[in-house]
Figure (cartoon, helix red, strand yellow):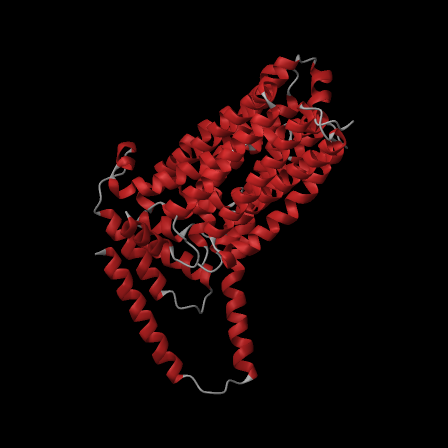
Length: 485
């Protein structure tokens, strides 16, 4: 029934477009062109501004993740922490993020996407202030836990908000900005952390939160959430504000409302409902992509890159680490441009292929080192393999699973399903970062070959299970998934 309704809408839109085209004059004057360009610019302006405000949360995410790396020695010296105490400080961020991930869907469904971002910012501000005023391990850990909770909520609500406000032709690229700003935030934190004290660095973490809180006063709530919450007037006002004051929002508003009305007749979603045939495909796709994203080894390779380069024979890991930072940002920008041109499926499969190549190259280099063969080539092969890996991950496996996660769930289960997906992601991040050193002690080449196996499996999974969402509205994506179930 829902599929037929969407097809009817599509046929109606096509018919209307044909009639409108016949009514247009053959020649358009320059003033008409300028007026049309002005309307397009206006329609995108609020979407772009709203996205900028939302990705301040992503920048904060990166700042929190990158904080511990440049501050380890100074915090341990100033507060006289043992290695075990500092390890607790670093890892408790992930524990807080897991809890935030579990609650993120409920918070965003209850208080709205803006309300969830506001809550996250307040937790992060509280956490940074606790870190700044800490004089011992306890307050330091409490502050780190609070920032972790905040970014756990951010990791869900930011891509969801961007996906729900964006027109379908911009949605992929704008949602990918989430990953780009995480990368930039962590890189900035790492760079300036080597120049200023750890307390001052904690205060810089307040800046994106303050910008976010101020920006939330000027951007609209997600129209889809407003429609689901029954705020009819606010829904239309928000959608009109996002599309421009002169834009015709009739068709889009009708599609959103039809989707919400169809979902209202369904019972309230519970965890056990996610295993039903109706939602199982979306859940399998979302959870599996997050498992693959983490178990190709990104957090192990990223967190311990310096030690990996030293293990390969380099006198210092700084060169390789700087090279990684230089590669990440421009490649992530390229992915942002390509995601709405190439599509989600090709980009993630190409990315997984690059990760496979990088892991095989790095693993083979360590194998040669273990056999005392071509030792002069080992450092070059390891650095080259890791850079290929990082570039490939940044262009697809990093951002695309978050984009797809924000697109594939119906709005009535988006909160609970999204929370589970984000929890799986953070659990995988902890598992990989915790086991990496143990795996490297067991077998350096074996570690990278294991990661390459996950990359190869990703290609097969995406080819068989993941639908292409490029150029489709969120309602059309749901119809596509139901049709293939």
